[in-house]
Length: 319
Image (cartoon, rainbow, N blue to C red):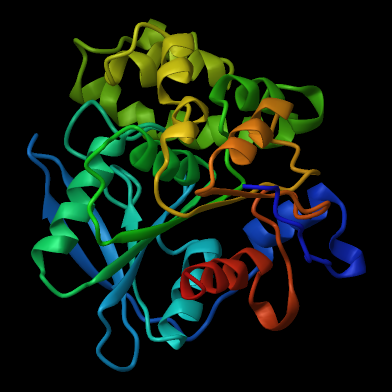
């Protein structure tokens, strides 16, 4: 499919990557959304918390929302989409990944960019309700990689899944990690690492046979975190094995349902390899939109409805 021409024009003050990214992450507020929590037990005895919000009238359509690294279902980029879709007669199921709902998860493992086994459980749980004829999945950053990997790695995608929307997608996890470790992104990397290490601390006490204080103290960068924890806790040899196997880039040619990727060209978190032009040109189901502006999940637009949210709605209703 040819590359999609973007019509996104941000306010003049939101053209820089830093301003749009930081404002959207720290200053945006979304009001008028009510969520109700459902906890599901996973086959390995752990749990996921799903935060539901509903259209005013009974709906047979639902969007599954997947947050980014160290996010949760109350982040504005999740609640903004929930509200817009609810207002347009589509229910929303916002997934909190393991350990991200305000309560530590029960196992040593947690979540990662390629943990599609948990997404599959959520999809099957929703289908078991026998309520929804159409399911859309919208992922943000880490969640975007997961969504695309999910539909690209399997031949048994349920017929009810009609579309994927992937925003600010780190299609190549190694490339994205390298960008985050660059000097200009140091402030972001420090913030992410601080959150990750704080969440890992209790596991030192819970699982002393899995991680030691020496291991923990050796974590100085995000790649160290993936070497010491992410890879080992989730069955990979090391960080590089994790990046290689969990990146969605390799699965994009196999996608067989309409999938929209919106990656801003000024997203400082994304390497050139995160813009899958070749895959989009050769796969009629893959739509790649590369706005000039937008930063990382910072597509600020009018009336507090962000461009990526209105485009997601437009994409699923236009199928």
